[in-house]
Amino acid sequence: MTATAPRLAGDSGQLRLARGSLIVVFVLHAAVFASWTPHIPDIRHDLGLSEARLGLALAGEPIGSMGVLLVAGAIVARYGSSQILRWGVRALAVATAVVGLADTFAALFLVLCLWGAVLGTLNIAMNTQALTIERLHRRPILAGFHAAWSLGGFAGAALGSFGDSTAVPLWLQLGLTAGAAMLITELTSRWYLSHGHEERSSGPRFVRPTGPLVRLSLIAVCGFTCEGTAAIWAAVYLQEVVAVRAGLAGAGYAAYALAMFVGRVVGDPVAARVEPVLLMRLLATIAGLGFLLALLVPSLVSAVVGFALLGLGLSGLMPIVLRTVGRLPDQPTAPSVAAISTAGWLGLVGGPPLVGFLATCLTLSLALGLVVVLSAVVFSLAPAVRRAEVAA
View 1 (tube, rainbow, N blue to C red):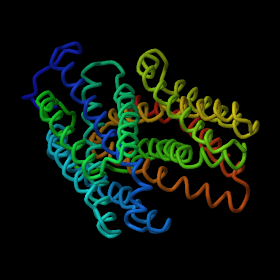
View 2 (cartoon, helix red, strand yellow; view 1 turned 90 degrees about the vertical axis):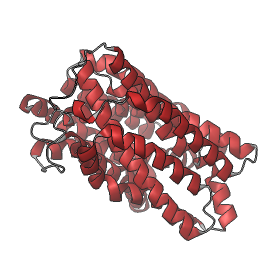
View 3 (cartoon, rainbow, N blue to C red; view 1 turned 135 degrees about the horizontal axis):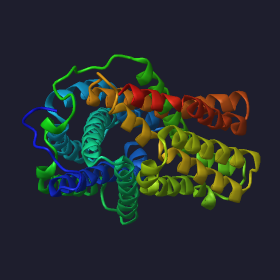
View 4 (cartoon, helix red, strand yellow; view 1 turned 180 degrees about the vertical axis):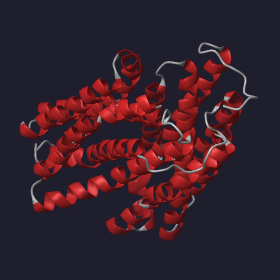
């Protein structure tokens, strides 16, 4: 921390305002992205895209995010999370408005690459600022920010579904959403914590691949692989294996998402009372055994319960990992967050196709057993949290 940064008490009004303003960013980050997803079938129809070309166009968003993550860590370390948050939300508003205007395959792909780069950069800045606020609060609050992100995703999906059902043009909906997001953040950005409050703000711009960072990155890969698998394959599993009717196919992922939100809401009080290694092992056990129930007893009730337990178990993993990353000795916070986020994105993007490949070689149920295996890997890697904290 620099000498010029004022000291903030854990219950100071300035710190509460900083926390509230960052919650707004987490909500908007998810809401802006989620608000366009219900329009994807219409985009495919309007642009005359095949399934393959639509998939390639949609790949622009993760490609843009992955391409910028490590560089974004260096940028946040150089200029501070507060500055990147201010300019990042403005860039997000512009990129969001442009997404609604894409009228060709190439334009959609390029705009989504840009959009993904902005979303990825904001992700690093948001979590870096969150770690700074949590450190000054001197108690766990990180899961609450992630709960706000989940809430924003629900709100954005609902907004997009409403716009789609009322035939509101995508360009108009995204334009209005982008304008509202920019206005709200312009009103609240004055309360972001300045660069001077961030630990090691003048340190190196990139991280060294130390043992603790590698182990924490592996936990992130496992967790995000499970998250991506649940998002992509839940409905397919319920339809093809459990054989539910189409109207109930979304029940598995709905239960998963709701349980993850609830887990994040209660995650901070639990983290304040339970030792982190024990907590991570409890969460991994809940996720693994819960999902094993869904695979061994292929009925609607057991599948919904299994996906809910998976969401509950995964809900607290990343807050623990990010909290630990923020305490690694001799490692800059923002680039460390970027390294963890990059690892997570690899799992999120690469996990679902891997499950698809395994399903073609085995069965879908056996392929989804990968989630149980990865939960066991997280259980075994849990001591990395203690080692990192002791080292710090």
